[in-house]
Length: 179
Picture 1 (cartoon, rainbow, N blue to C red):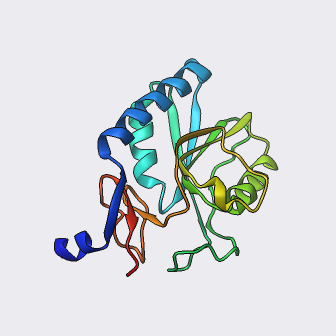
Picture 2 (tube, rainbow, N blue to C red):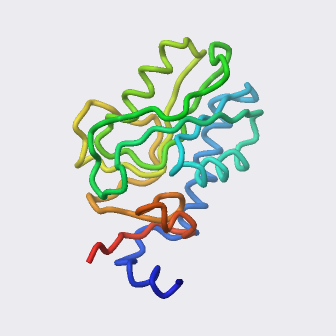
């Protein structure tokens, strides 16, 4: 099976070491920003779970975690543009500083919809951190508060990102070879 995985990796774009370094930097910024104040990290499933796991271990401020799921790809390599919330938060977020943890911002529509939904729930503050950003694909006016890596318009896999539910376990970000 590993051989098949390797044939679909066109190029490694971001190494495991580069990801770890950026997460340490992001965690330090979060620690400085919240200075001991508890936060709620909200992972957008499924892709952001690996990123959030590493981020929550790297921050030193007290944190809780929550999960939401939204889909727009439906097994393809191009966003469908149709956003569906398939799992919502179970807790009241009105007493929390909320940080949405996302794997990748492509068109921006998913995150725009999620942030609008969560703002209506009156969190103490709401920020977005994304591992990857593809600004060339943006169709809506949305920017993350913190972006770890800006990438070109390539379909990427690894570190939680998938193609047809495969490749999430790769410890790096790679360009997927669709051929």
